[in-house]
Length: 143
Image 1 (cartoon, rainbow, N blue to C red):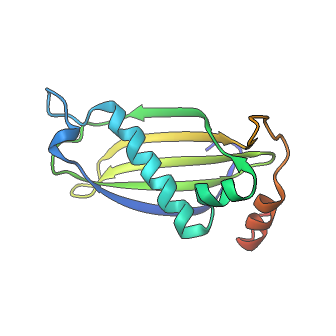
Image 2: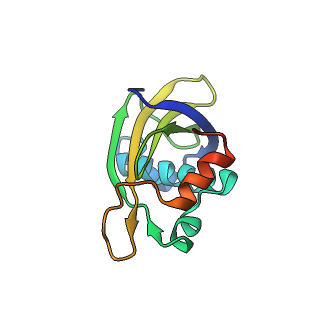
Image 3: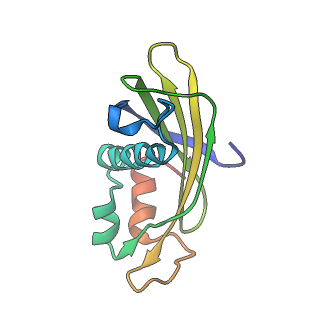
């Protein structure tokens, strides 16, 4: 996990739907991005770092970088566990690592990492941590 330190995590359960598989009965790769997004939203609700909180404090947090590493195939009716792990960083960014496993056999399906950068509502990158983010880190004892 590079130099970042793991602090908080959350696990989201996803059941693969028929509409999410392709002609070879594998989850189409683009759906994993949605699974990760759903996990980020659930993490935000759980820990008070949701998109609306960021927005209400005068910022956006668009995804700047997203890396996915496909390990195994998942198919219709598989139940996937999407674990999102917040990683301690410095500056105006949020970094998450993800581990997706199949619940039935604990098979590793996918690993991923996302980097979100804080920007002002005018679209300017904010290299320093916004004040509300500093307060959020203090609340969770992330120093």
